[in-house]
Image (cartoon, rainbow, N blue to C red; front, side, top):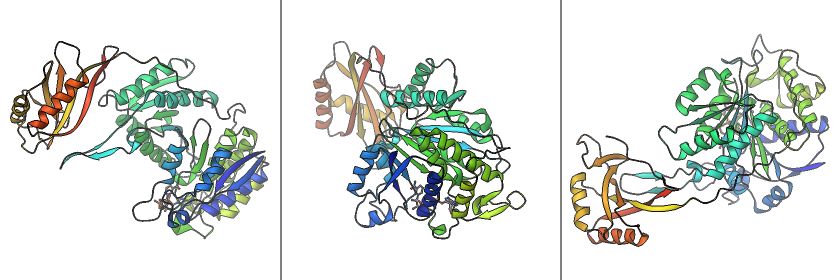
Length: 478
Ligand code: NAD
């Protein structure tokens, strides 16, 4: 018997959770349930994370969480419960199977069976943002080697145990050469350890277009957080209904399972919601805790229910569906079919060995790091790069360091800039060392000279070589 934590959430949450729990019990899942309170009520009691402090104890103890959707109250100051849970509990992998159930659920893509594996903790979601000048705001995109190794290895392990044939990686490494470049590089490195699995990489824009147009060419797709956030919704939508997708958030010692839709407040209390997203999330949970046989039994009964035309209102279609059912009745129809298999849709089989696999990043010896310069960012309202360069040079330098170039939003504007380049008030001034070893003190001295000359420093970024390889990008432009 495994004890899990559940939360019934808001809106349609309690109805779809009750239907799901009834199915789990009827199918013989060896699960005990411990309920916690999350969502609107908790937010409105003044807890801005939407979860009471004592609920964390249940989550920490049980390590497996089945969560119904919640309503985030309107207005500012409320933190996303999902983002908090993912970060606090280290749920680095978001796994979202997106499958078409043609001809029983209308879809433009009858042949679609894609699993999106999204990195869940890094990228622009670190939420580190700054306003730097009157005109320019910044959001930091952080991609780490251990974070990337974990998600890429997870994708390959997932493909192997779920008997998938191909893993595709989406990045934008033609533009973000270091961050997305690392993601692509690690994909190639780790992919080489899985010769049995086909590998491919697409630049995210054309990859996304292909996914929306010909999803049948994809199998498992792994991607950084932001692309995964957007494209997992696109993929779920084009299967025919977002109401039919569940997702898993997986960490080293903890996992959370939920439907991908929200709390649909307007449908609440009407016994009209489709519980399928949460049922499929519960099936992922069963596989995770090693009850693959029960998972298989429920999913095949659920497929048979769809196939028999017993549909909730959101997917009901005259001529295809046999009967329109409420939330509760749909759950009962699944229970009646436990032990049966679909005849047209493909029955599922889950590998009992799947469970929750552990992924460990490799230890890499630290690189030899050499300080070779600094990018000093200035606010200057005068839009003339030549004058700015002159002012910087007039400020003086401490020796062994000199101004190499100035860029504006990444485009080189000095030396030899184009007068046509549009400039904001935000300038990056790159200084590089000359002959001798560069000390951090020289950088501080350079900044002091700039400040003495009345220049407005907003931040600096050191330039390093790692084992002789540049840890920074060149400027864009001519
Ligand atoms: P939503 O997913 O709740 O609803 C979007 C549309 O889909 C609505 O028309 C709704 O009726 C329909 N729908 C959703 N689930 C359905 C189901 N199971 N069966 C039938 N129809 C269904 O998205 P929203 O309206 O943007 O958000 C409503 C609330 O949900 C907001 O407070 C939002 O913050 C919250 N939300 C929570 C989660 C979560 O807890 N994981 C996720 C998304 C949104």
